[in-house]
Length: 412
Image (cartoon, rainbow, N blue to C red; front, side):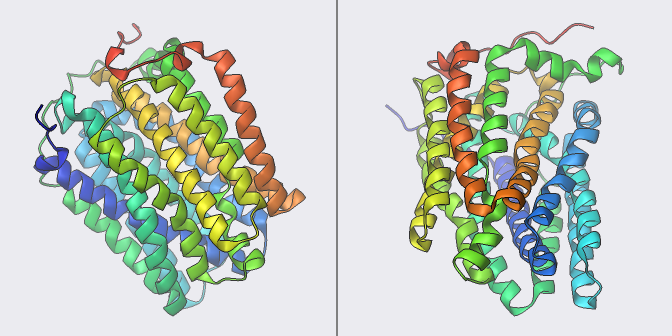
């Protein structure tokens, strides 16, 4: 039996992948610098949560517009422009830090602009990927594309932590440069399949992504499970508190903690990209979300820096399996003319779980303390798994993604 073709023989996918690596590293460097800087400025867990809220608000307000734009205009150009705007917003933070006029309000306003650009970038990037590779390579392309985040979370915090210890503005400068490079890398890519001609904008078309997801119990279940698991169980926003106040480390220690989930996720993404899952997809999804919750509890209970890194690695590995299964289900189960709008709704839920989850973590840490906030979140994730098994039996019963086909889009 011949070995499956590698997605890295596809030049357009390689450029797309390199662009995602640069952008993802830049995001991680910016995230580390902002988290450490705002916590040092205010000593407030609540302000750490506000960073997530400022990224969540644009997702809510722009999601429907972003999906419609992704389905009606040049996706390649949209991603390039979004990356350039994110780079400029990070450059503002660097200039403000170098000039000594950085403060909490400036950081939050700049993050709001950053989040607005990413509200367009994220769904459009997801909708662009299937146009770059043949259908038979899509599952491996999704896994390989997802691995970029893990590479970034390994390299980004390590580089960012070292550079921040030397010069905070330097972190922002390099991050801005990587965003601009990511935009330039997309110029030469070639589209394999052009999306069909778009119908005129109507109220029904604008909300078609929501309607499509609502009518598809498998996609609805996968998104809902991830939404509540990460919303309640996500705890990485509190890592600056653990690094500074619990373990007594500086930016380098924060970098090691932030890269730990990616070490586990990258280790998992390699076999997933080489050997995509063939059976028991539904049960595997629920089992990995439960593992995510248990790893969160272990992270909260640990008083050892090394054990905390192990817990976060397991946390990341479990999340990686969940991401690959969920993204593949959504891409395979959605027709091309709907991918932009469905991806936009998906991005809203992912952003909700990540950014609003960051706000939730900061708020509960402000109320109860960082350690109880993490443990409570992990326990809530296990309850989400039990509820999901009851509410989404179709998702729990999936044996293989090959058996799923895209249904017709909602009719106006």
